[in-house]
Length: 217
Image: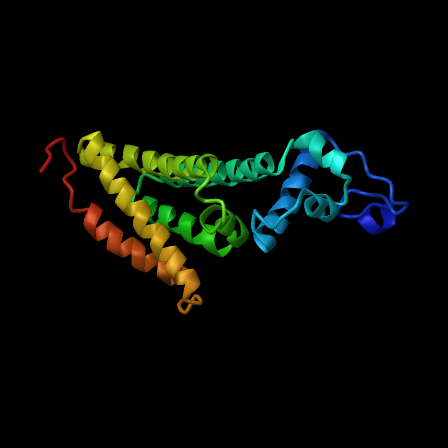
């Protein structure tokens, strides 16, 4: 049965205009999606809770039942995207024992984030609220979790110390993030898979030179 035949619409209200009672988790997901649309289109400072409620098709009291204010709503969105991205990096590390493929997986995660999830990318990296301490903490946490996931792989494969592995992991993440953002801003002149392969090759030629032993250089 479609939304049209059931009398419901995607915003969670019925054809009669009465709100549809959704499970709390479903309503929260709906509100976050509406908020993301508004924040990306208008920026944090120009967005209003009225706009978000209207976009979601709910009353402001319903919106405030889930989120006490605009900042809490924005931070909840950041938490969702930052945690999901960090998990994607961890999954790339766990998906194979081939370290070149792990590097490729990490690069792909960054390129997918800026390409297929461009609204989430803009919310995280191009927000007009980046200087807010709570926002900066969440972005820093995403980067830290990503570095930590790659650090463990580098340590187990090369035998270098944690401090050295963290620097190498940060370098890989930095190369992936900057390259992906540059590729997107430049109009995606080359195909995504080719761009990923270029950065993978560059990164792998560097990381693969480290010894597969406990001897550090």
